Image (tube, rainbow, N blue to C red):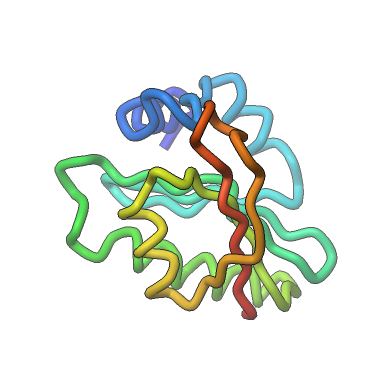
Length: 133
């Protein structure tokens, strides 16, 4: 997937919050050595590993391809890739009104460790989650 492809899919998945990322933003992120991209025909995950910590930066699956195991497969590959790069734990943040994503992460053994109040919009917190790898 090119940065333009990533931005187009991200736009389809995140129309309001978090705001969709541009192709230029994806290009800059992909140039960073700690960052890595996992792709499938209708989805992707962007993560990074610094020292012994991984961060899931974004996960996007085309609306028509959801609930078919694609996000779960990307999460499993993220964990394996992060471990291979030396990470022992991983972190992410998710919008508090994204119930589907929060359920996905909970099924994959992520636990809530905090919140950033009104981070995305008034009344929409960033839920911070952690998982041991």
